[in-house]
Length: 139
Image 1 (cartoon, rainbow, N blue to C red):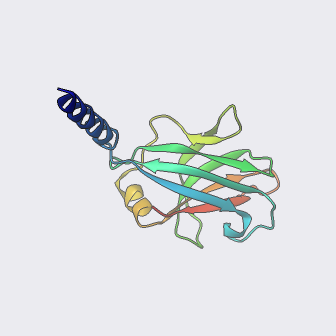
Image 2: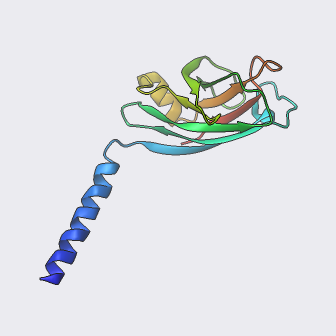
């Protein structure tokens, strides 16, 4: 009887793990710096975070920045070394981190760009309105 209960617990845990991954969200770690901006920015600011994008294009996650007066953050569509349009605006959280709005979603073309590594996160400041730090999203 103990073996049957142990097998049941293992099966339930395995199913729970599968259920958690059913959305197909893949988490991408990102590191942001001024040297990745286009053109590069001389800044001591830095940032890091984790962005998850589901198979349906749903976006979640966060970034944290330090060493700057951050006033806006976004995901942009653009290859490394190129600038591009904002595709997901972020909101500032109470703890100073930034995250996409609940329900944020990439369209099919944006999702394809993300999968190809052609999206990036950048954070803007009053001193660097076009962006002070940036990190390419490489899923």
